[in-house]
Image 1 (tube, rainbow over the protein chains, first blue to last red):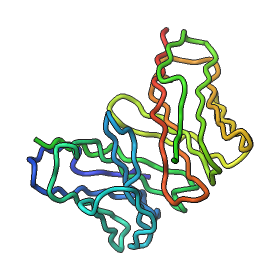
Image 2: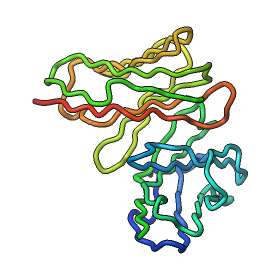
Image 3: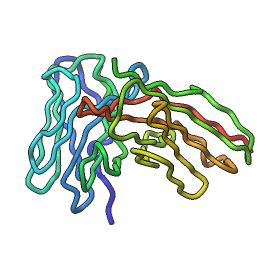
Amino acid sequence: KAGVTQTPRYLIKTRGQQVTLSCSPISGHRSVSWYQQTPGQGLQFLFEYFSETQRNKGNFPGRFSGRQFSNSRSEMNVSTLELGDSALYLCASSSSDPLVGELFFGEGSRLTVL
Amino acid sequence: KNEVEQSPQNLTAQEGEFITINCSYSVGISALHWLQQHPGGGIVSLFMLSSGKKKHGRLIATINIQEKHSSLHITASHPRDSAVYICAVLYLTGNQFYFGTGTSLTVIP
């Protein structure tokens, strides 16, 4: 059974640009959640989608957005990039409510903003 | 404030030692997760707890709801256990995870 796949694995952008990251969950999983990890702030919850609907959202500005498609694949977008957006972005899939069920993480997308 | 505190921040152990990592939180929770992150970034979910105790191989996780505290124990530690261990909680009043800062474990052969 294939795991959670995130693309791209590494990318470099400049301030003001936007970026789109992709997450393909484990087959059959309908929930996808996103997380940001930085050396200073550690892991932080971004948002969670289930059956194409955003169910939960963390404390991030509106520049951070996401969506989920009918095949459960999810994308997150960060607009008007800032230096502080440099981070490892992780997604996780779950067959049930991820806030109380088991999470399966991807390897992450490492974003560098110059 | 939804704080999650882990201790110790860093831990070095000799192979074979019994290891304990602690996680404390401030208010009532729905669930607590223990995560393991190896160098390079990949995260593995070890346990999800809402009460009591769970065991998987050499790993044991316990939670005391009244004391708002959870522990992760590793018996007979091995160098492959070297990783960062992170606890994450879901508070009863919220709908998002709050994470501890992680415990960096190094097991020396």
